[in-house]
Length: 408
Image (cartoon, rainbow, N blue to C red):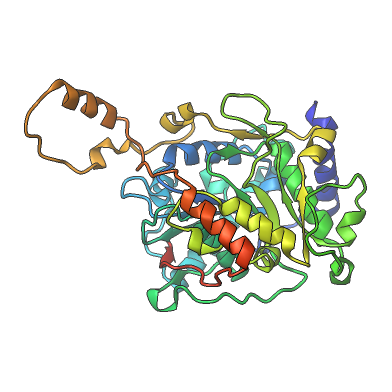
């Protein structure tokens, strides 16, 4: 489908024609309308391909987005901050509260001025590539390297956004009970996987869903039945009945085939209030593999104020491009437009060898391409935990069981 015929693009362009004022010389810093949340763990090559995709978004899309990266205990030499430092010249290594505010505001003003001055040279679809400095990116590092900390990292991302992008969290206050204030202006978050690319038209579609729901009054979303099933009605009347958690986005798998019957199980669009209304992720599942997505959506479906809305059929109906899962080749390749960190073989611990043999030669050759620690994917423990918790209902309200800090 031609981009000009894409319903998402047409809607988005129309919204911008109503709100854009290119003649104004006043630059007002506003919080973004959408936060794109990415969890990161030693995946600098995948992050490079993400950034290569983001910098080709249109100016209108980028003006509405802030990218938040949660670095979940990556090793030195493969942290997200180190990757950004390779690709951004104007960087600051010290982020105290006062200097951070000043430097970020100055950076954003320069970015907005640059976009403003080059507006006539770009079209709505980002045909002219930008650079990393045009992106509004924040990086937060978790200090501890915790096995399978997916739920904890997600909780941190949503907590940061709901608390207006805090700076740090020390050990004395970790593991506390989160009690967010719920209101009609709750920030929107698009939670994406590190290995999933989002085409421009798809991001416009996401922004369209968010904008339409945000324009409704607080009173219009007050009633919903308990345990609503995941579905997407043909009409838009559902938007006046409940707070949606958009999920099940269409995707192209790693082998290049459309997984029409198996939409993505983790990617979702929701507000921070809705996320916490569902209880967030239970961090009792952290430390073992699996059942993070099922237990979150189980609780979301059980919440009287939420409805899980499966989006893949609507994407197919309006020819919205699916998400694209990156294949294994992306983990060892680097986009031509960016610089990547060296492979981490040099960072692995050295061990003494008793004798040289063929098997050790083979191991050395394999370790040369080692990129990240391999963890067990046995989900038996979390499967039993899921059965227990869905039966007994004893969900944990102890969140953020680690320390973290903002580093970018």
